[in-house]
Structure formats: structure tokens, C-alpha cells
Length: 362
Length: 87
Image (cartoon, rainbow over all chains, first blue to last red; front, side, top):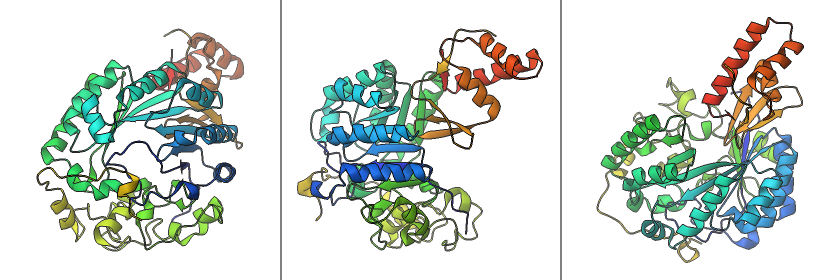
């Protein structure tokens, strides 16, 4: 058993509500109900407990966290008072100057804004609504203020060919930190993966484009890019290992080792309404189940990469094999690797289910 | 090497923990600092230039001025390159 360190980061998913309908969203396809959301008082306790546990990075996400604007300000203030670093992960459509000023005044350090495409029509097709101007306004607003800005662009089959345009867009807007995030297949994205899976050619070209852009923009723009793991030989070291560095609290209070973990229906997660974060981290069977290397089956158990990959992703293992304790099938050593090689052979264009309450599973 | 005043880049926060250890907190990341780096970064206030920082270090530490200057310049150059500090 590895030594248990404290977590360093917490993601607070304030709500699953969102005004956009992106098919690549990793939120669960059961979107929950607003009435189930933790109230401000409880969220403040979550922040207090997280900081007492040694957490130094706090992210506010969702859904769209700015739909709880006043709570967001109060929580940012509390986290800053504890000396934590605060990240707002938003799609930007409600981020006006008054809200941003209020957040900066209470210590907000970093804003990440996502775009769906670097041009209006495609962005509207993906988001299900035209919010291009509002996003552009938000990006330009944040870029002027005393706060770090990251542009987040989730790549998938529908927008992959616009990667050069997205980088040119970022350069034109003077954005210094860009995260090119390949779609990960959880929640809505898992449901819509036939429409979203990039082609092998798209992936290969993406690697080339990013490599060249990094070279050309050295010192001007930092580009964070990770290969889509379905196309790699070894799995991603998801969350740097299950319950090793990070935790998430879902809108309904469930305390999770990662934002996608509710997909694993064989685990029961503690809830912040009845459990402290300390108790969850150190003693919850859902956190200890896959921590470290003791749980690993073969081929992980005797693999020299076991403390590099940490067995890959538990959610992916569960979604693809039905067993959260299996080797991630992305790994070429997995006996179920055929599942991944089949999935990544893309067929003709497929329809997708927009992320909307009327499409949500109940 | 001498240059204008420097400060932490946007969204980069310096933190000292109760046990005295020092960190830089950055978007989605944590950079551990050794004590030399911590002391130098604490002196960045957006007004002092590199030479003034070295002069302050010389008052505090019993090291040859040239050694302090070399260490400080190397560290400031590295942190600049990494985008953690800015002019």
C-alpha cells in the first residue's frame, strides 16, 4: 500500500445546469435537478474542509458555474482567505465585467474559457445556440484584466479540421495559454462517441500542427496538448492515479475521486451532506478501492509502467469492460484492447444527442 | 545582466505555508520553491530591478556579491523563460 498523501486539488461542480448543448460534455447523462444542488452554506464547509486537508488548487466548474454567480463570488472569497488558488472553468456566456470585477476583487486567479469552434456557424452547430459574440466579449474582457487566462478548445471529429484556425484565433487575440483538449469519452461524450471520434488522419495531422505551432510560438503561447488516448499505445495516467492527488464534489454533494466517477455504478460515493472530505479521502471504500497499486490485476501488477500509468482510467475501464478494476483497454497489453481498436475505426458521420434535459437519462 | 523591474506574471501567486515552505501557485499547477528562489521571489515587487534585488540579498547573506548576482540572475532568467515572472 502506498503512503496516502493529502489531496492537492479540488474541483467544485456547482451545478450541472448549462445554457449550451455540447455533445462532448463529460457531465453525466442524468443531469440531476437544481433542487438537489448543495446550498452555499454547505459549499463553504466543503471549501473549509478542503483547505484543512491541504488542498491548494480549487476549481469551480459545472455545468456552468456562473449560473450561481453570487455563490461563486462567496466561495472564491473563502478559498482565497485560506490561501488557495482559484480557477474558474467557464464557457463565458455570462461573464460580464461586473461579475469578473467582483471575482477578481475576492482573489480569483485564473479563468479558463472554452470555445466550440473559432467561427460562428460551426460553434453554433456544436453548442446548439449562437453565443459566439458573448464568448468573444468574455475572452477579450478577461485578457485585459489582472488574472490568468486559458483558452480551452475541445477537439473532436466535428471541429478537428479547424485546429489551425483555432490557434490563429488565439494568436490574434493575444492569448498566452491554450489548452487543446481532445475529447474524452465520458458522460454525454461517451453516448455521442460515434459522432465525435476523430479519424486517424485527423489525429495524426493534429499532432503535426501542434508540434509546429509550439515551435513557432515559443515564448508567446503555451500550448497544452495531450493525445487522445484511444489512439495511444498506453493509457493516460488518469488523475495521476485514482484518489492520489485530486477530488471532486458533484453538484448534489457526492465526493468523487474524479469528475467522471459517477459512471462507475458498482461504487457508492460518500456525500458532503453526511461525510467530511477528510473521512472520504482517508476511509471511503470508493476512494481506497483503486488507490496505489495493490488493487491491480495482471498485466498491470507486473508491469514496469504501473506507477507511470496507474492502470489508466477506472471510469474508462468500467464503461468499456463493465469492470472498474480491469486494466484500461486503451493499453496494448490489455486482453480487451480490441474494444478500443474497434471503437476508433470511425464509420460515416453519425448523429448526436445534444446535451439537453429532454435527452437526459432519468 | 540588468533589466527593468519584474513581478510575478498574471495569475501567478506566491504562497508560504505555515511550515515555512514556499510555493508558486499557477493555473492548475503548483511549483515548489527552494529557499533561495523563495527569498528572491519575495523581493519582486514590480518596482525593484535585478541589481536592487541582488543588493538586498547581499545585505541579508554572507556570500560574495558575485555569487549572489550569478544565482539571482540565473533564477530570474529561468522563471522569466517559464512565464512565471514578467517585466
